Image (cartoon, rainbow, N blue to C red; front, top):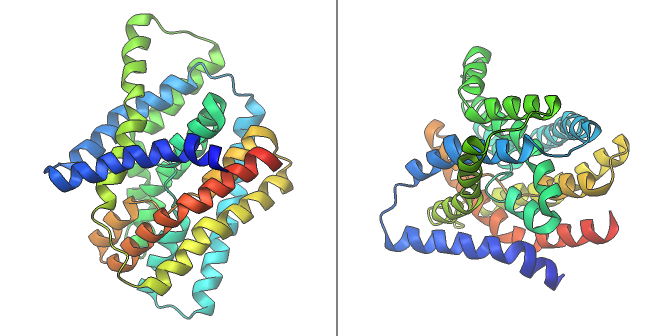
Length: 302
């Protein structure tokens, strides 16, 4: 357990702490840095790892099939929870935001890399892409309580460079085509900046969230996000017969804390932003324990 904490979690905490310190002592345009990571570094990271990755086609299919099973199961659980609790529409939207959308990129990718190596990162990238696309579509729809239509959601997807990075990388991978060093070298350099930048941005963003508001709702959301979600993920992998490093990565990523991006959406659409930011803060803090435990369990029992 100590090895997991020191090798997989501590490097992330250290980089996030640097971001938090930076956010406290220097005026940082975090939105611009975040966009640089989103539109430049992240697509480069995805492309660099996927275009020559030796991931069996069956694993790619398994990861996508897993999401098609696990996400609806998680949604049904959260919807039933909201129904039983008789939450009103705005409360229901904030609960769905904080339980359905995890920090698969800023937090999940480095955990996968440090805990499971390059094979883990490759699978985490495939997992993270649909999550990223849903953050710009389904998450917006939920935050706006249905005010964003299917057409706008589709347009949002096509504007994401990560979408095209995945397509280009998979086409080159399938056709077994290489890249000249004049292209691969700058792509690799940009890709190398992705994870440190994302974690530092995470640290800066966390300095602006609070644990003080709506603690009960935030606590329930954290339990669903950190415990219920990976349990459902375990069930989905067993149902689909997924094992090995793919199963390990999927279970751990399913237990990531609430995405910081949800605070931006909650503020934009006034979907109980204090509750959402409190859930982000509490789930991220508690994840130091839960994610460490998940990684240890995955490495030793799955």
